[in-house]
Length: 239
Image 1 (cartoon, helix red, strand yellow):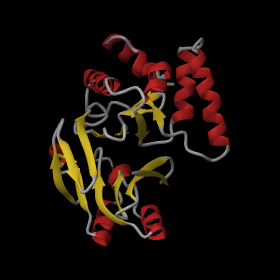
Image 2 (cartoon, rainbow, N blue to C red):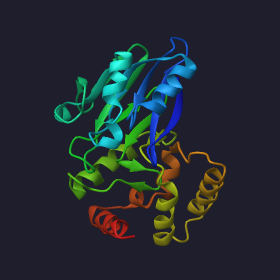
Image 3 (cartoon, rainbow, N blue to C red):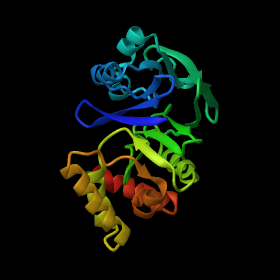
Image 4 (cartoon, one colour):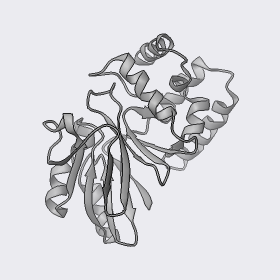
């Protein structure tokens, strides 16, 4: 299984999950359709599934056109069935979603939105976290509560340390500035920031990150209790 990162809109990432033998793919959070179509047509790949982590427009904007063009099935959280355009398959928390050779465990990870989910392709040790967990950050709390977001991050923290994390936006550099401000003696973070700057200088994405790095460097994952997390999230909102 191959993952292809596709830049969309201003700072969004969509992801193609490609089965190279069968020449089929899933797309995660297609912000817009044309960049996805370009990649599919160039590689002569058929898009079979559209996986949405949540209902925000910058994650579902390409759903309808892609579904129409490729006759794809749209997969989303059951409680967001009225907010995700074109949805065909309703998934629940801790459900195993399996089609063809694609297999993923669904985690309900609310906080950013009430119906946010993550797709964990556990055989490949890959998770798509949308806007719940970013590299060196976490999502703003819009519909959920601090407790929900804290609990959602703790779910992700239980995964194997070498899990590769693909999130919804290129926010890593700005997030790193907040982390180093509040964790200034973190040598691993300093090293990671050098790598981040080098990748961006070469016009490369900072993703994927991996869970071990995030546990060492992401100050939101280092929060030991809800009170500490709330303080950090409020500080980040005005940073």
